[in-house]
Length: 473
Image (cartoon, rainbow, N blue to C red; front, side, top):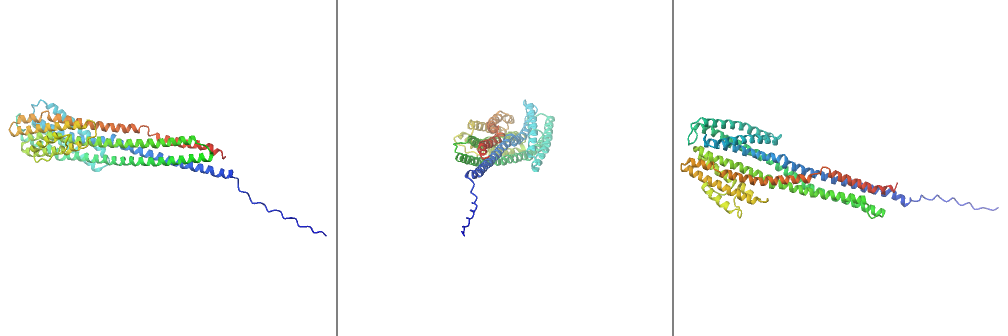
């Protein structure tokens, strides 16, 4: 019997072979592409957000200082000027009497300033908004202005009825006018000045906040722009290495678009920061300060008339005149005679030496505009001429020559000085308008540039990766 060997056992089934390399690549390469595309889209969205927010801050800052709050603040400064000039015209009318050849011009100017004051009060009310203190001050100015107008009209009517004479008006007229001018100088003008300070604070805070946001936005745009470029470069490198192609042209175009958006936005924000700074520093600040100087100049002219009009208060008006003069052009002086001499020295030394303070000291210390130094010099020389005329006025009054003193008060010295100051202020108004116009022009079109550029970059990326993804379907 033959024994057969058992048949060999069937071989165990072989273990499953690992998937082929191409199949593994099908699962991983599209995933990497989609991940990189997602990073690119997020980076583009961040760049779009940074540009949009930063441009919005620039637009808000420019709108505030150039088109809304800034002009309104200047209008509140005009309120101080209008009120002071109203009182100056009443004093001039009472001083010159019914026989003055310029009486109608004074009355017309009084009415013009009253209308200007009404408009300025409305601007101040609008700027106060919901601020209870500001609105209360505006109402107080309105009420006080009504009382002043009634007192001024009563004084003028009493002066019309009084017998003509070369001396001061009758005591009844002076009594009513004292009430009017005290109301103006001690109540209305301080309230008007407070309105200007409060309004200026609003603009200053808005300006600083928006300028800071624009400068910070410039950094954020640069950072998000670099992130977007890094993501796009990473995608480009990955596609080039995996698919052995030199460049993916749509992704390259998207990179150019993103870089262009970031660079253009940084440049525009730089220009906007400069425009905001010039509008504020070269324009708004100086316009506001010189408007205040002009208003004080009007009160100086009014104080000359009041000095001659009311002999009982002459010493008071003389001291007030000195104090206000030193606010405009400060040099140490204990009395008017010393001040006249100090003004002569100070003006003679400019522009080589500017050792004076006050409004003109600040102006002389910040010369940034073409023709500004020459305009300051002209204004100072005419201010000096105005002070010299004031010296002659007081000398004539002290010598008993009232007619000569009145002639000096009504002479051309103040008008010439005021015209020069208006021209100097005009330089800064022009600089202000130019800076605002430059800022507006730089922002033109930036409502649609960021979304259009971001969308274009994303679409170009999708167009660039679509054929590569299609290879794995």
